[in-house]
Image (cartoon, rainbow over all chains, first blue to last red; front, side, top):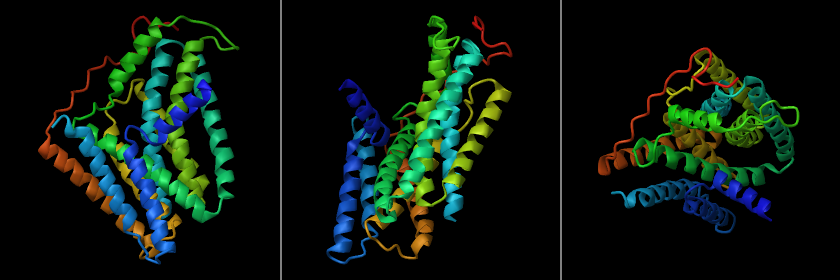
Length: 68
Length: 264
Protein backbone atom coordinates (compact mmCIF):
# COMPACT_ATOMS: atom_id res chain seq x y z
CA UNK A 1 0.00 0.00 0.00
CA UNK A 2 2.81 2.37 0.87
CA UNK A 3 4.37 1.71 -2.56
CA UNK A 4 1.10 2.59 -4.30
CA UNK A 5 0.93 5.70 -2.18
CA UNK A 6 4.49 6.73 -3.01
CA UNK A 7 3.89 6.15 -6.76
CA UNK A 8 0.75 8.30 -6.53
CA UNK A 9 2.64 11.00 -4.60
CA UNK A 10 5.40 10.97 -7.21
CA UNK A 11 2.95 11.18 -10.12
CA UNK A 12 0.99 13.97 -8.40
CA UNK A 13 4.11 15.98 -7.67
CA UNK A 14 5.45 15.27 -11.17
CA UNK A 15 2.41 16.59 -13.05
CA UNK A 16 0.53 18.87 -10.66
CA UNK A 17 3.35 20.19 -8.47
CA UNK A 18 2.95 22.79 -5.74
CA UNK A 19 -0.45 24.23 -6.70
CA UNK A 20 -3.36 21.94 -7.57
CA UNK A 21 -5.62 24.87 -8.40
CA UNK A 22 -4.02 25.37 -11.82
CA UNK A 23 -4.73 21.74 -12.65
CA UNK A 24 -8.36 22.02 -11.52
CA UNK A 25 -8.94 25.23 -13.52
CA UNK A 26 -7.40 23.62 -16.63
CA UNK A 27 -9.54 20.50 -16.38
CA UNK A 28 -12.74 22.47 -15.69
CA UNK A 29 -11.95 24.80 -18.61
CA UNK A 30 -11.49 21.82 -20.92
CA UNK A 31 -14.81 20.30 -19.83
CA UNK A 32 -16.54 23.66 -20.32
CA UNK A 33 -14.93 24.01 -23.76
CA UNK A 34 -16.12 20.54 -24.78
CA UNK A 35 -19.66 21.33 -23.56
CA UNK A 36 -19.73 24.66 -25.41
CA UNK A 37 -18.50 23.03 -28.62
CA UNK A 38 -20.62 19.88 -28.60
CA UNK A 39 -23.78 21.02 -26.79
CA UNK A 40 -24.07 24.75 -27.47
CA UNK A 41 -22.21 24.59 -30.82
CA UNK A 42 -19.95 27.50 -29.87
CA UNK A 43 -16.40 27.29 -31.16
CA UNK A 44 -14.92 28.35 -27.80
CA UNK A 45 -11.23 28.28 -28.76
CA UNK A 46 -10.61 31.30 -26.53
CA UNK A 47 -11.86 29.77 -23.28
CA UNK A 48 -8.92 27.52 -22.38
CA UNK A 49 -6.19 30.15 -22.96
CA UNK A 50 -8.08 32.72 -20.89
CA UNK A 51 -8.61 30.25 -18.04
CA UNK A 52 -4.96 29.10 -18.12
CA UNK A 53 -3.73 32.72 -17.98
CA UNK A 54 -6.07 33.46 -15.06
CA UNK A 55 -4.97 30.27 -13.29
CA UNK A 56 -1.31 31.25 -13.66
CA UNK A 57 -2.01 34.72 -12.27
CA UNK A 58 -4.05 33.32 -9.39
CA UNK A 59 -1.34 30.81 -8.53
CA UNK A 60 1.39 33.46 -8.62
CA UNK A 61 -0.71 35.80 -6.50
CA UNK A 62 -1.23 33.10 -3.87
CA UNK A 63 2.45 32.20 -3.87
CA UNK A 64 3.58 35.79 -3.39
CA UNK A 65 0.74 37.30 -1.34
CA UNK A 66 2.18 36.51 2.08
CA UNK A 67 5.53 38.05 1.13
CA UNK A 68 4.24 41.27 -0.39
CA UNK B 1 6.68 24.94 -38.11
CA UNK B 2 5.35 22.39 -35.63
CA UNK B 3 8.33 20.10 -36.29
CA UNK B 4 10.77 22.92 -35.55
CA UNK B 5 8.86 23.86 -32.39
CA UNK B 6 8.76 20.19 -31.37
CA UNK B 7 12.51 19.74 -31.87
CA UNK B 8 13.39 23.03 -30.14
CA UNK B 9 11.13 22.40 -27.15
CA UNK B 10 12.42 18.87 -26.61
CA UNK B 11 16.03 19.99 -27.11
CA UNK B 12 15.85 22.86 -24.59
CA UNK B 13 13.83 20.86 -22.04
CA UNK B 14 16.26 17.98 -22.34
CA UNK B 15 19.26 20.31 -22.08
CA UNK B 16 17.92 21.78 -18.81
CA UNK B 17 17.33 18.35 -17.30
CA UNK B 18 20.68 17.09 -18.62
CA UNK B 19 22.46 19.95 -16.83
CA UNK B 20 20.83 18.89 -13.56
CA UNK B 21 21.60 15.20 -14.16
CA UNK B 22 25.18 16.07 -15.07
CA UNK B 23 25.66 17.78 -11.69
CA UNK B 24 24.69 14.56 -9.90
CA UNK B 25 26.73 12.33 -12.22
CA UNK B 26 29.82 14.55 -11.77
CA UNK B 27 29.40 14.54 -7.99
CA UNK B 28 29.15 10.73 -7.99
CA UNK B 29 31.94 10.19 -10.49
CA UNK B 30 34.50 12.65 -9.17
CA UNK B 31 33.86 11.93 -5.50
CA UNK B 32 33.25 8.18 -5.59
CA UNK B 33 34.05 6.11 -8.65
CA UNK B 34 33.45 6.53 -12.38
CA UNK B 35 32.76 2.91 -13.33
CA UNK B 36 29.80 2.48 -10.95
CA UNK B 37 28.59 5.97 -11.83
CA UNK B 38 28.54 5.12 -15.55
CA UNK B 39 26.80 1.82 -14.77
CA UNK B 40 24.07 3.72 -12.90
CA UNK B 41 23.75 6.26 -15.70
CA UNK B 42 23.54 3.53 -18.35
CA UNK B 43 20.90 1.61 -16.36
CA UNK B 44 18.80 4.78 -16.04
CA UNK B 45 19.12 5.57 -19.77
CA UNK B 46 18.02 2.01 -20.62
CA UNK B 47 15.02 2.37 -18.27
CA UNK B 48 14.08 5.68 -19.92
CA UNK B 49 14.47 4.18 -23.40
CA UNK B 50 12.14 1.33 -22.40
CA UNK B 51 9.55 3.83 -21.09
CA UNK B 52 9.64 5.80 -24.37
CA UNK B 53 9.72 2.66 -26.56
CA UNK B 54 6.79 1.09 -24.70
CA UNK B 55 4.54 4.11 -24.19
CA UNK B 56 5.26 5.92 -27.47
CA UNK B 57 3.89 3.28 -29.88
CA UNK B 58 1.11 2.37 -27.41
CA UNK B 59 -0.15 5.96 -27.36
CA UNK B 60 -0.27 6.11 -31.15
CA UNK B 61 -3.09 3.51 -30.95
CA UNK B 62 -5.26 5.95 -28.97
CA UNK B 63 -7.65 8.01 -31.20
CA UNK B 64 -6.07 11.40 -31.96
CA UNK B 65 -8.92 13.46 -30.46
CA UNK B 66 -8.80 11.67 -27.11
CA UNK B 67 -4.99 11.68 -27.14
CA UNK B 68 -4.87 15.44 -27.73
CA UNK B 69 -7.45 16.11 -25.01
CA UNK B 70 -5.61 14.10 -22.36
CA UNK B 71 -2.09 15.02 -23.45
CA UNK B 72 -3.09 18.66 -23.92
CA UNK B 73 -4.51 18.81 -20.39
CA UNK B 74 -1.39 17.16 -18.95
CA UNK B 75 0.95 19.43 -20.91
CA UNK B 76 -0.96 22.58 -19.94
CA UNK B 77 -0.87 21.58 -16.25
CA UNK B 78 2.77 20.52 -16.49
CA UNK B 79 3.69 23.69 -18.40
CA UNK B 80 1.90 25.90 -15.85
CA UNK B 81 4.05 24.30 -13.16
CA UNK B 82 7.26 25.08 -15.08
CA UNK B 83 6.12 28.66 -15.79
CA UNK B 84 5.07 29.28 -12.20
CA UNK B 85 8.38 28.07 -10.81
CA UNK B 86 10.41 29.98 -13.41
CA UNK B 87 8.53 33.24 -12.70
CA UNK B 88 8.85 32.80 -8.93
CA UNK B 89 12.57 32.08 -9.30
CA UNK B 90 13.15 35.02 -11.65
CA UNK B 91 11.48 37.37 -9.18
CA UNK B 92 13.32 36.02 -6.14
CA UNK B 93 10.30 34.42 -4.45
CA UNK B 94 11.82 31.00 -4.89
CA UNK B 95 15.52 30.23 -4.71
CA UNK B 96 17.20 29.81 -8.07
CA UNK B 97 18.29 26.28 -8.86
CA UNK B 98 22.00 26.64 -8.27
CA UNK B 99 24.06 23.86 -9.82
CA UNK B 100 27.15 24.90 -7.87
CA UNK B 101 25.55 24.47 -4.45
CA UNK B 102 23.64 21.36 -5.60
CA UNK B 103 27.02 19.91 -6.60
CA UNK B 104 28.57 20.76 -3.22
CA UNK B 105 25.63 19.14 -1.39
CA UNK B 106 25.93 15.95 -3.43
CA UNK B 107 29.71 15.85 -2.96
CA UNK B 108 29.39 16.27 0.81
CA UNK B 109 26.82 13.44 1.00
CA UNK B 110 28.90 11.22 -1.31
CA UNK B 111 31.99 11.64 0.87
CA UNK B 112 30.08 10.56 3.96
CA UNK B 113 28.58 7.40 2.47
CA UNK B 114 30.18 4.00 2.97
CA UNK B 115 31.49 2.00 0.02
CA UNK B 116 29.57 -1.24 -0.55
CA UNK B 117 29.74 -3.71 -3.43
CA UNK B 118 26.40 -5.16 -4.51
CA UNK B 119 25.06 -7.10 -7.50
CA UNK B 120 28.31 -6.81 -9.44
CA UNK B 121 28.56 -3.06 -8.84
CA UNK B 122 31.74 -1.97 -7.05
CA UNK B 123 30.27 1.16 -5.44
CA UNK B 124 26.54 0.84 -4.83
CA UNK B 125 26.21 4.45 -3.59
CA UNK B 126 27.72 5.90 -6.78
CA UNK B 127 25.51 3.59 -8.86
CA UNK B 128 22.25 4.50 -7.12
CA UNK B 129 23.07 8.21 -6.94
CA UNK B 130 23.77 8.32 -10.65
CA UNK B 131 20.80 6.05 -11.50
CA UNK B 132 18.29 8.08 -9.50
CA UNK B 133 19.63 11.41 -10.75
CA UNK B 134 19.50 10.46 -14.42
CA UNK B 135 16.17 8.61 -14.13
CA UNK B 136 14.33 11.35 -12.24
CA UNK B 137 15.64 14.17 -14.42
CA UNK B 138 15.09 12.04 -17.51
CA UNK B 139 11.46 11.21 -16.71
CA UNK B 140 10.40 14.78 -17.45
CA UNK B 141 12.19 14.58 -20.77
CA UNK B 142 10.62 11.19 -21.52
CA UNK B 143 7.20 12.70 -20.74
CA UNK B 144 7.82 15.58 -23.15
CA UNK B 145 9.29 13.29 -25.83
CA UNK B 146 6.28 10.95 -25.64
CA UNK B 147 3.59 13.65 -25.52
CA UNK B 148 5.08 15.84 -28.24
CA UNK B 149 6.22 12.91 -30.38
CA UNK B 150 2.89 11.06 -30.38
CA UNK B 151 0.83 14.19 -31.01
CA UNK B 152 3.01 15.20 -33.93
CA UNK B 153 3.35 11.58 -35.10
CA UNK B 154 7.08 12.08 -34.93
CA UNK B 155 8.55 10.24 -31.94
CA UNK B 156 11.78 9.82 -33.95
CA UNK B 157 12.38 13.57 -34.21
CA UNK B 158 11.64 14.04 -30.50
CA UNK B 159 14.11 11.28 -29.59
CA UNK B 160 16.78 12.77 -31.89
CA UNK B 161 16.32 16.24 -30.34
CA UNK B 162 16.56 14.76 -26.82
CA UNK B 163 19.64 12.70 -27.70
CA UNK B 164 21.30 15.75 -29.30
CA UNK B 165 20.77 17.78 -26.12
CA UNK B 166 22.20 15.00 -23.94
CA UNK B 167 25.26 14.72 -26.21
CA UNK B 168 25.86 18.49 -26.21
CA UNK B 169 25.55 18.81 -22.42
CA UNK B 170 27.60 15.64 -21.80
CA UNK B 171 30.31 16.94 -24.17
CA UNK B 172 30.47 20.31 -22.42
CA UNK B 173 30.41 18.59 -19.02
CA UNK B 174 33.24 16.23 -19.93
CA UNK B 175 35.29 19.17 -21.23
CA UNK B 176 34.63 21.31 -18.14
CA UNK B 177 34.58 18.50 -15.54
CA UNK B 178 32.55 20.84 -13.37
CA UNK B 179 28.84 21.54 -12.88
CA UNK B 180 27.51 23.84 -15.58
CA UNK B 181 26.66 26.69 -13.20
CA UNK B 182 26.65 29.33 -15.95
CA UNK B 183 23.90 27.77 -18.04
CA UNK B 184 20.86 30.11 -17.80
CA UNK B 185 18.70 27.29 -16.45
CA UNK B 186 15.82 29.45 -15.28
CA UNK B 187 15.53 31.30 -18.59
CA UNK B 188 15.53 27.95 -20.39
CA UNK B 189 12.87 26.59 -18.02
CA UNK B 190 10.79 29.71 -18.63
CA UNK B 191 11.03 29.17 -22.39
CA UNK B 192 10.14 25.48 -22.06
CA UNK B 193 7.23 26.37 -19.77
CA UNK B 194 5.90 28.72 -22.46
CA UNK B 195 6.16 26.01 -25.12
CA UNK B 196 4.60 23.28 -22.95
CA UNK B 197 1.71 25.52 -21.93
CA UNK B 198 1.16 26.70 -25.51
CA UNK B 199 1.07 23.20 -26.96
CA UNK B 200 -1.06 22.06 -24.03
CA UNK B 201 -3.61 24.81 -24.73
CA UNK B 202 -3.54 24.12 -28.46
CA UNK B 203 -3.88 20.34 -28.31
CA UNK B 204 -6.20 20.34 -25.27
CA UNK B 205 -8.69 22.70 -26.90
CA UNK B 206 -8.44 20.79 -30.19
CA UNK B 207 -9.09 17.54 -28.33
CA UNK B 208 -12.17 19.15 -26.74
CA UNK B 209 -13.51 19.76 -30.24
CA UNK B 210 -12.40 23.32 -30.96
CA UNK B 211 -11.50 24.39 -34.50
CA UNK B 212 -8.63 26.84 -34.11
CA UNK B 213 -8.80 29.87 -36.41
CA UNK B 214 -6.13 29.22 -39.05
CA UNK B 215 -5.74 25.56 -37.97
CA UNK B 216 -2.10 24.74 -37.09
CA UNK B 217 -1.05 28.34 -37.82
CA UNK B 218 -2.94 29.32 -34.66
CA UNK B 219 0.11 28.11 -32.71
CA UNK B 220 1.92 31.15 -34.12
CA UNK B 221 -0.55 33.22 -32.14
CA UNK B 222 -0.81 31.00 -29.05
CA UNK B 223 2.94 30.79 -28.32
CA UNK B 224 3.59 34.58 -28.40
CA UNK B 225 0.43 35.22 -26.39
CA UNK B 226 1.51 32.80 -23.66
CA UNK B 227 4.97 34.42 -23.73
CA UNK B 228 3.58 37.96 -23.47
CA UNK B 229 1.18 37.07 -20.63
CA UNK B 230 3.95 35.25 -18.71
CA UNK B 231 6.38 38.12 -19.17
CA UNK B 232 3.69 40.56 -18.05
CA UNK B 233 3.20 38.58 -14.83
CA UNK B 234 6.98 38.57 -14.41
CA UNK B 235 7.18 42.33 -14.92
CA UNK B 236 4.28 43.01 -12.55
CA UNK B 237 5.81 40.84 -9.81
CA UNK B 238 9.19 42.52 -10.25
CA UNK B 239 7.63 45.97 -10.04
CA UNK B 240 5.19 45.35 -7.20
CA UNK B 241 7.19 43.00 -5.05
CA UNK B 242 10.91 43.47 -5.66
CA UNK B 243 12.68 40.65 -3.87
CA UNK B 244 16.39 40.13 -4.49
CA UNK B 245 17.40 36.57 -5.30
CA UNK B 246 20.26 35.02 -3.40
CA UNK B 247 23.60 35.26 -5.20
CA UNK B 248 24.98 31.90 -6.33
CA UNK B 249 27.53 30.33 -4.02
CA UNK B 250 31.08 30.11 -5.41
CA UNK B 251 32.20 26.57 -6.06
CA UNK B 252 35.78 25.35 -6.23
CA UNK B 253 36.39 23.85 -9.67
CA UNK B 254 37.47 20.25 -9.31
CA UNK B 255 40.84 19.51 -10.82
CA UNK B 256 41.65 16.76 -13.30
CA UNK B 257 41.99 14.33 -10.41
CA UNK B 258 38.80 15.46 -8.72
CA UNK B 259 38.28 17.37 -5.49
CA UNK B 260 40.49 16.86 -2.44
CA UNK B 261 39.81 13.71 -0.54
CA UNK B 262 38.40 11.93 -3.56
CA UNK B 263 37.89 8.24 -3.07
CA UNK B 264 38.41 6.46 -6.34
